[in-house]
Image 1 (tube, rainbow, N blue to C red):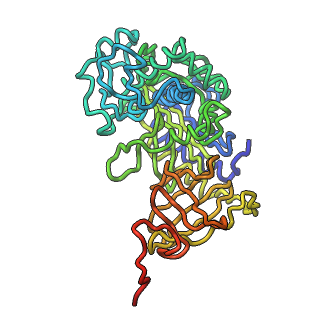
Image 2 (cartoon, rainbow, N blue to C red):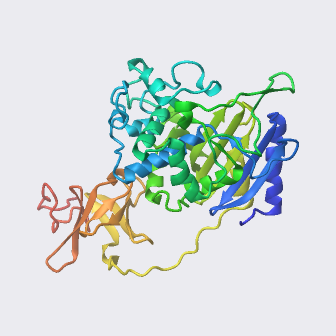
Length: 451
């Protein structure tokens, strides 16, 4: 553990003390994760008459969804499930149209937010067969893929997909494939001691009402699990890139890619594949919020500097949306991360001759070698299409991001082996603007440049 400075810890504690007092929370725990380790834990309020600890359980609500999504992505990586597969290919008999696995993961399926029948978060659940029999065409509220529409029902379907492929319950699959490898031993479907009780706090008086807790049955994949601050800290480290082999880091990065936004043109919040996304305080965060009657929880991680932050509380309401962002801001202000030291990297692949200016018509670009061995093509003016590329075994380069993501870059060489031009998905980049020596589509005016 690399703890925060004592002065920083005091400021973090002050912030959560204000939150617990003003939000009138029976108890509140928070934690900061840095470089895969728990760097700070803070708590206010009481659980069973004592301050909660990193091992005190709280219900984590929809954070459960991200754990289920992780097993779905493992199935995808194994070739058992395709993200574009209709869910009916994996859970036959459903009457919900052709919604896909990816749409369910990103809440773009158009399915109803809640299940048929009584308020599922406060009543005992029903078996999967009974729930799915009640789903029909009216469960689809929007054209699949049209828009973001949060769907708890969608994750009930994904939980069933996991169960059918693994031959065990969704919870058993999550436990064996995610929780156990990550060391999250205190994340369970029902509470174990010590755990907080869930409360509603009266809006106009300082009195409590105990909230119910139950097995949610087929809806459990949408929000059943209980966990501890210590376990959620490990989950934050996973989201920040310390995957411990549970998923390939590239797959987790794919889960963090925006698939949809949930706040329109402002784009401060959205969803990837099973992960909630937020842009705040100059950061791009991935994680998930969680709420169940009597409980609130959130985990955010920023993989760019391997930091995470989380909270748990045993109250139906009362935690401000900006709490975790403000904790990160305190960390940034008082313990800013130092950039990694620069060091030279040998050009073992002989790529130095490719570097420098290239021109797409008259537009100037520069090609650079990246420390990890890739290439970066960026416009010199800062305006235009920029992408990074990684080498393929056949000598071509694959676009990783930006406009050219997934596209192929080829280096075309002359008779002497020297690079003449770049072919980027039919676009030709030359060493000088419209170099007549290169095979520029459409040809180059023989009269050349004129005054």
